[in-house]
Image (spheres, rainbow, N blue to C red):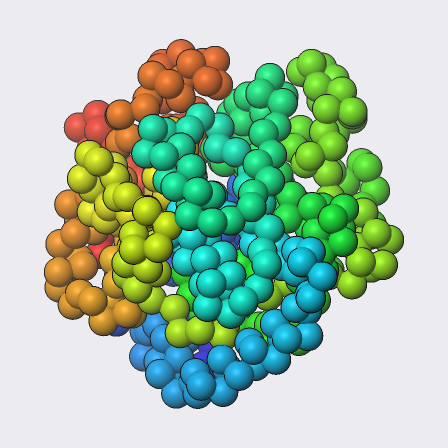
Length: 407
Ligand SMILES: [Zn+2]
């Protein structure tokens, strides 16, 4: 595959290619990042972007083409060998499955327990503010027959970090992402359960970059020893957080996993979609049938046309909206691109869905969100506008418009 990002490609200050291009097969643009969060504390690097080849097809679509040639029976045998290696006979837990009670974690934990005979402990980092449907799905999941550790961070600290991350990075989800990312390995170390299996998988949902997960140990960057002065939260260096009412002892849940403890624990981090051919619709139907999962009672979720993605947190909509502001592509783009790759919809239909729903303002929980982070509507708008990259946005007759849209 030829790599079209070359030395001539010009980038914006936040690391996005200045020339916007759309994939010929799906609706994704070249503004897609891993995690889609330029402006985060980890400096965005070019290798984290989606790659377009000489035919104008994105690396995620190419991953789905390769996926067709995967020998899934062979992969399932590998899964069984892995599980056999870690399976315990003394009744103790043998896997940690991180999740929120969304369709992917429901599917993963339930199938590992009830089809493959494992004894998973599910681990959840609580949302900022549960939605009614989110809490209901979480409860149904656990009541379907799984043990769970629910970790709820200090609400005052989490609120301050979320506000700082919104104001400084336009990334209100950053404290949640950091906390959730670190929680599963910490629980695995503490409870002496070395195998962690996630239900989602970056090549599947992200940019198509594959890693040899069959032999993967935990991402070394997670527990590399970090100097305290290299740690930032919400764009603020750790040592300056006392100015905002946060002490070092408040930050335990957000700090990186201890390097030595992680090495001693020999953590093995795996992703179920590497082993079992993943399809979001199939995971959804499985979760409905086995763990009582319910879709959004309002019908589709704001900013997209789907009914079953990220329903549990009142802040979710702002995560996708801020990402739309920074990259010009939002939740409908991601959902539609995935459905094209899974051959559920055609590109023409996807283009229409993106043009109709992408970037829709999440008004349902707007007041809750403003109240949660403690800012006014006026300040909210000012911050949003300050983060619109000039190569993506222009003001036409006093209104912000994307310079380009998928067609
Ligand atoms: Zn594509």
